[in-house]
Length: 204
Image 1: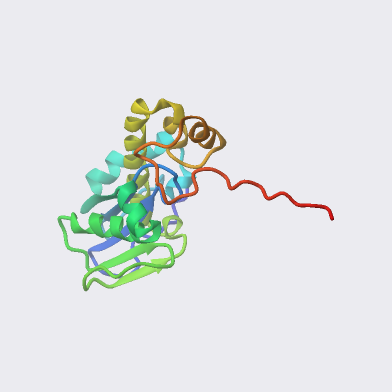
Image 2: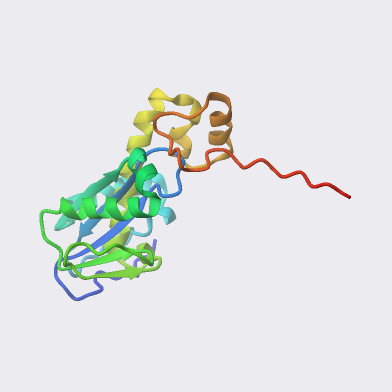
């Protein structure tokens, strides 16, 4: 595993890393996490959640929760996503996570290249930050595992869509189920749930 992730960007003691999960899904909320780790923290197994197996993500979660100075989860529902769009929903989920931290961050480092400022806390956007900084990687693991837990719960109610397997992402099987059974209250209605029909071309 990558043990070269950096523990701090700003030099501030209370620096929170933020990341989200579920932005590209057709169903379910977007989840975000904010994590403040000790300044010289080390956790060799920790990496961007997409680079980890599901088993390792779930092994890391209790370690992160125990050893972090503070951590929190923020959630924006699919109904809210449809009202404010997924980009704004991702920012809002991060804001909600930061709101719940029991330690006020002095600086925020955000995975990605854009962010809506949070109150008066300075922030830095870092492209692929979840593969560069431990606190963002930790946030990616928490956001991903808590969102997966949610999708497993609603899969019990709507098993046709294979959410326990695809977690709401637009797989062929997921879209086939939408075509056959229609959408659900958990689907994002402003998303393209089914592929656009192919245009017929006429050879004139």
